[in-house]
Image (cartoon, rainbow, N blue to C red; front, side):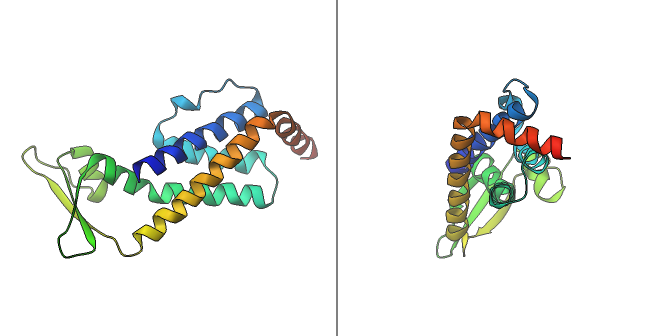
Length: 162
């Protein structure tokens, strides 16, 4: 799960860089964005710079899916996860106060751990959907990078029309 999210993040940053560079000429610096900033930035750039159509809808849908699953990325990277014996679930534990507080707004005392249960019914299907969206982002990022001149022209023509 972490690797799928990292791949999505990588390709989201590529798209942000190309769109921003094509639209404004700004240097590519999406590597400086925090994780939580990548897909909201991608959404803004797509909304601003792409016309209506399948590409815009596809990117917005992929972005929304990645954002929706970001909590699981944090679960798997900042929490101890163990399979619950005899159940289709994971038990999660953390002593990371910041991560624990994100879940329910309650800060941990230094000697405490927070736990949760992640039911796995349907989880494998969600991971497959996330992989599909991530592959889509990779495909579009590569297309944008190969066709930056036509992307720049598209953005300029949209601006002139508005």
